[in-house]
Amino acid sequence: MIVLGPLDEQSRYLSDWDYVLLRRTLDELLSTERVKKRDVFKPLHPGTAEEWFEDAETGEIYCLVPLDERITPSWEKVDAFKLFGDVSSLQQ
Image 1 (cartoon, rainbow, N blue to C red):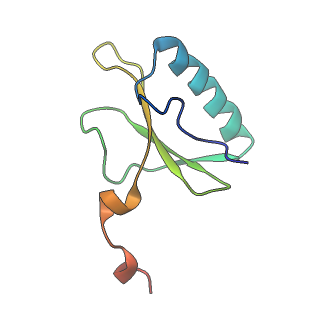
Image 2: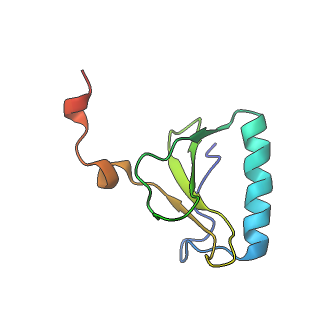
């Protein structure tokens, strides 16, 4: 079963209430180790306090930009290949 995924295929932006619900869900999944928090290596949204979460089952990583007075919260999948390029030369 996929634990993490897009909330809405049309938009990555969250309402304040959706953010609260997602944060509660993430806290529960973190406590059961179905989701792991990951370090942000290359931010998708510089200047924000974004957090990355990995689905322990699928390995997919999602980015959460938290609720802030000046920023609309968002939730989106991290495309590691697009972000980091070809990493096959790093694997030895």
